Length: 288
Image 1: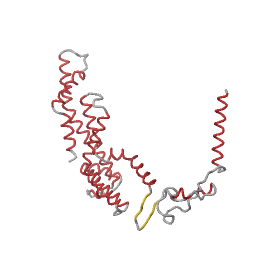
Image 2: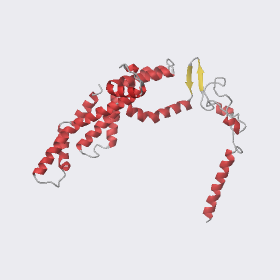
Image 3: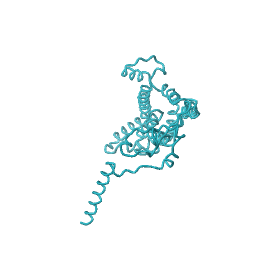
Image 4: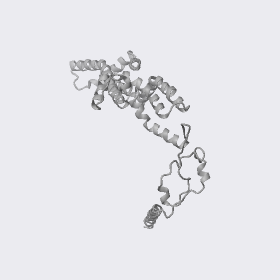
């Protein structure tokens, strides 16, 4: 009983403290501006904050707009520099959207779908496991996308860091290698479909395709290509299933599942034909 009362008192004290804090009756302000200033970029005259950090005297002052109180941007002769906090924010944002970019804007989609079709055709359930397939798809994606990544680094990142390109120019330079990669693997009927939906005229040239149209068109084309390859992979294994099923029916073994007998023959055929070499080699060549 005492434990419950003590817990209730702590809970009540916490609520009172929160109310007291919100009302601004017990707000702590930073008064040591030199300690805050050492984390900022540039001199006091160059900073973009309207008031000195820690100069607020009441709760209303804190609600006023004070640009770059902890994140500052120094602008000098057309060249902008970002402080560490803003760089970390940008890097974390890129890390958050990186999985979507890797899956949708690269060869990853086609590779992972074909690998899953291969495993399903072999009927080996979880062999190879998902972690192995995803890891293999990632390394194959890096191998295929290496020229594109190198172009982005050389044409966009290096000039931008050197101050030779503005931010918008760097973004356009980074997108161009991706557009050059996606366009040859995108079918025109998919581009035409999204152009028609968006009511945009298209002359048939790559430069006239908005990036908002090229990306979904590329994804749809990759899905179609992956399913076509998966169908071709299935054909020899379906033949083995049909032969095994016909043999079992001829022998009167109706109760024995054909897939149980056909799976060793599928694996044997796959090994003898060096299946992984054929599938992965030809899959990678579809991007060249």
